[in-house]
Image 1 (cartoon, one colour):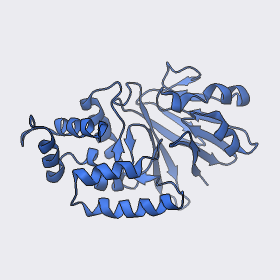
Image 2 (cartoon, helix red, strand yellow):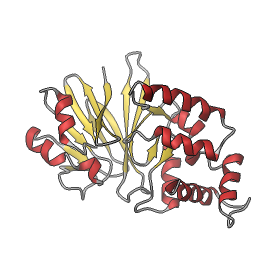
Image 3 (cartoon, helix red, strand yellow):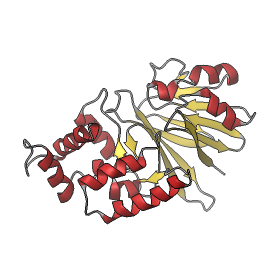
Image 4 (tube, helix red, strand yellow):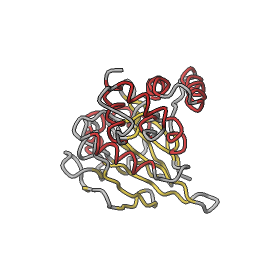
Length: 259
């Protein structure tokens, strides 16, 4: 059976640890030390990378030196042995991964979708989205444009509703605070705040999320909804009822940068 667990790193990073049939893979190992601890003496089989930021790549060199394992990720990143790009597919843990280009946070950003066949014979998708889609939020635009990020998020939002979502940071409560401000009448956001607060009190992760949950509570996926639009318009006088969803998204992202 497939197991996916978070390895905490730094202040709020999660390195995702995938295990199946004695194999161990990690996604975005910014630090080698917590990965080595989590492996408990077993061998690391491989590494997956979503983008070039150091808190996602800093452990590559040490882990590869110790385990001589393959590294899949954007081609220009030091230590990547198997360059991948949007539209590619690969086999990891005996299961197919689809690679999606999702520029915005960075220009090289990839999202990785694992297709698991469940014990019952059904299909379960798992989305590893780095810093593009967060739980109730999205990444800052360090390199890309609002239009690029909006379309990247729209691409991910069209995955099946039951898809599990594995962002790389524990940002949920901070993001939900912003979501409450943008959409104060959204009861799904209120319910999610209560649920996530209870998890954090017990020091449990608020992740994974699902696409369905993000569609209900993530303002950056809800730019077409009247309350979200009106709040964005009120925050920027140059916007009006005719503003398109990219403009609404850009307004929300700029506001969140200084929230």
